[in-house]
Length: 224
Image (cartoon, rainbow, N blue to C red; front, side, top):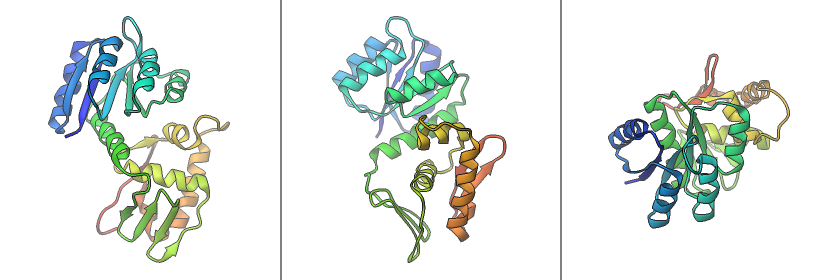
């Protein structure tokens, strides 16, 4: 059973997240401050930390900085802030995902599940959808016996979508995850790469679905 640490000074937020997390079968612990969270991380192993930014004492960013000296446990930042500068700081400190309040508890749990799944899978573990095989370690993609000739960014884009199956990723999130903020441009580059990637995928092109006005998601069905 995966173990989750919920860090927020607002008891109502903690209890809301705890309720939904336990419904997903997660074992939960709580911390009302950054200091308390660091003590609990020193004392036990966790599979994921959901961490608020705006807290008394040391805030979420400071807590994350100290946490990274102790552990590489995945972290989802939970915050009322949505500014790009805050996201940049969080990702530079090693955050795995970013959810802005007010949030959907079900979406938060979907993101939590995806982060835990990624962290537990081997970097070399092959991902399979029907006859589509993605090998993260070898950075290769096969459809049956046919090898796809993808660019590095096309491969990274396909991999992050596949690792977050059924989860909608915005164009901004894909830019953050694939281009890592050092890319100077706009979200149209995501659309261009998705178009090219679909052409490579051929009969599997419909695995990448457009969510109009938001971004993209990867979804496989047996009949695909």
